[in-house]
Image (tube, rainbow, N blue to C red; front, top):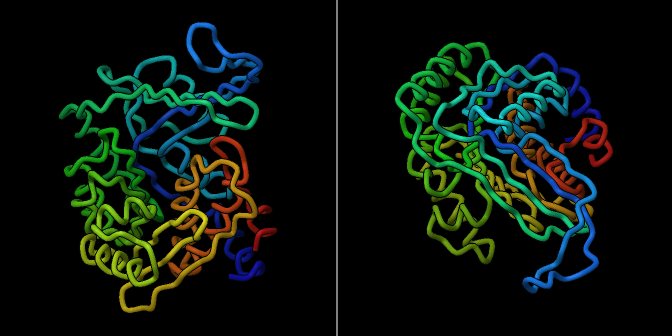
Length: 323
């Protein structure tokens, strides 16, 4: 896609709203410096100088949609704790509604804390709860989907395998999308591949694709085998395999495979790159861009994000420059 074609498309981004359903998280970053080793254990002592919180998981997908001018409706579950309050605060800064968030009395909010010394991530601490949703919470989510999908321009399922995307909820998403003829883009996790059927586009990374297809991807032939097998397993219209430094490979029904070389100038931090891919792809495709052109835009957006530290987003201006 050319720069001018993208600009024409981007002018329409504010007219579209994408519904994002998935595991909502808080990403916390502790930035500091290391000058000595702990006397208690052979580990570095990080003197924390700065703390940053931002939206993570499905909430970061919604944040990416907002960053390039689109509108996002976020549906998910958070706890009734301080971390959930921080998520609501970050959403308010992004001018995002929180009407689609269910506040659970039994689950605490998922949080990932990354400790970074200089520009190097030292470790990550996860606070998460994979307890299955209660029947009441599932009912609330299904009601939200019924009421909001008809008014959306597309749907993204952002599955981080934290318990929200179960067979009942995903089937509800598929039924609503089929009934109202909505685009459905899925960012998958391997344990749930068996019920991602009938999506429009599914976007596994190479490791997930290898496991799901049971194919070791080591050359063009094995890559093609994996892509075709995933099309059969998921019954999706397209499978976009993200391949890190090797770019992306798009497999569409009835079309030749398309391979997109990486648009990244440098890889600094891959945190959240998959969120950027699904957000950009869904927004572009909701405006009538072909899946191939939408994937091209998503490739450029991801190339920008991996060049930044932390959970980052791309702007329209940066995508234009990359194109």
